[in-house]
Image (cartoon, rainbow, N blue to C red):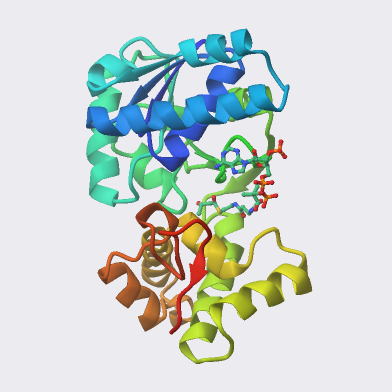
Length: 293
Ligand code: 3HC
């Protein structure tokens, strides 16, 4: 089966990155969100990242314009999916919202279309079960920032068939990513390791082990991470981290995944990281300034 047209649901930090790399690989992309302002913001981010590629002489302006021209912003969900070969969903990590969206997509997308979720932890099998094509349902987990990160984690649900895995491997390779195939489990492979590590860094701040900047510097230089764990937590989004921690506790029935009270307090305050301008760092100035806890 050849994929030509892709619908990306969600124009946020993951959705616009996925739309970008798909368009760059030659696919026609419809990027759907629920409000024109989110679509405009997503398109502006894609344009900014393409312009950076032009400035660095990685592509010509004409090539960048051609890629940008392959992304169409769409408001209506049915309109977005009605004539595509693949739907990649990158909407918020709210189980009910995902299930409702997948029911609607399943009713409107062509019968042959593959349905892929970019969820960071929610059960692929649970989402597949609300559709009439669970064998064509799969996890396709990208990493932020999507244009830069080299991996797609492919997750097989209970009913996902091998033909679907093969198509998604091919698409992932075509958009320039290496793939790993994992069986369904909470957090799959990467977040199973990453989220507990980031939560531990927040516990360390809560307990006064080190300042935010020292904790980040320690791990950045001591472990050669590209970003310290608190910078990375702000980058991923503290709301997403909290969601995954709570989901892990529910699924594993193991309190070792519990979220530190500090994380919950910050999310309640709206300090959800870089996208909100405030998290472990204050992003309102020219350079991020570490907060004191
Ligand atoms: N979009 C597109 N390109 C970007 C970008 C963005 N948001 N941010 C940076 N880049 C590009 C830059 O243009 C630059 O390109 P070049 O090498 O061709 O010049 C390159 O990335 C490096 O950027 P910088 O020099 O500005 O900065 P760094 O060297 O610090 O790299 C980084 C930035 C790539 C974000 C790096 O810090 C990094 O790898 N951080 C860790 C990211 C990570 O762990 N992501 C995974 C998060 S977990 C996740 O997504 C899963 C979810 O389920 C939770």
